[in-house]
Length: 192
Image (cartoon, rainbow, N blue to C red):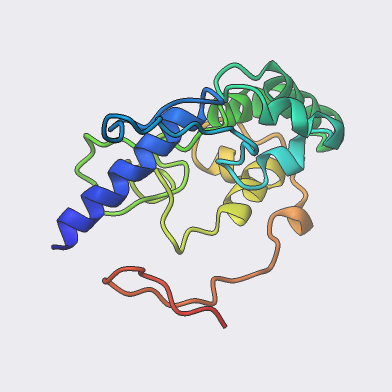
C-alpha cells in the first residue's frame, strides 16, 4: 500500500511540476469528456530555498517567478555577481555555485539505487548524503546553501580550491530540525 501511495503522490508531484514549469499547462490525465482540463499559473519559483533570497535583488523576484527555471539569465548572473561582489568569494566559487544552483529546480535521479533523498545530491555527485537528490524532510537546506555560499563546503567537497574567504558567522541560520518523522504518511508530526 505504501508503494502505491508513494507512486500516486510522486505522479501528482511530477504532473504539477511538468505543468507549472511552463507557466500554464494541462493535467497529464485529462478529465472525462465534457470537462475542461485544469490550467495552472506559475506564481512562485522556489525550488531551492534561500537561493533567490540570498542571491537575487528583490526587484527581480517577479521576473524570475515568471520565467522557466532553466531559462533564467537574471538569477544565473546574480548568483555569480553576488558571490564575488557581496560575499567576496573567488570566481571559481561563483562559477561552481552557478553550475550547482542553476537552474532553480529540484533534481532527483530516479535511476539511482540510493535509499534516501539528499538536497543537492545529484549536483554534488552524492557528497551531501546520496546520489538520489531531491530533498529529505530532515535536510537543512538553508545551512547547506549558506555553507556553500559563505563557508568551505565547496572546497571540502573538492569542487574548488579553498579561496580563504569564508565568513563562518554566515554559514548557518542556527535553526535546527526540531521535528520527528515516521515511516507512515504524512511522515511528519502534527503542527505545534
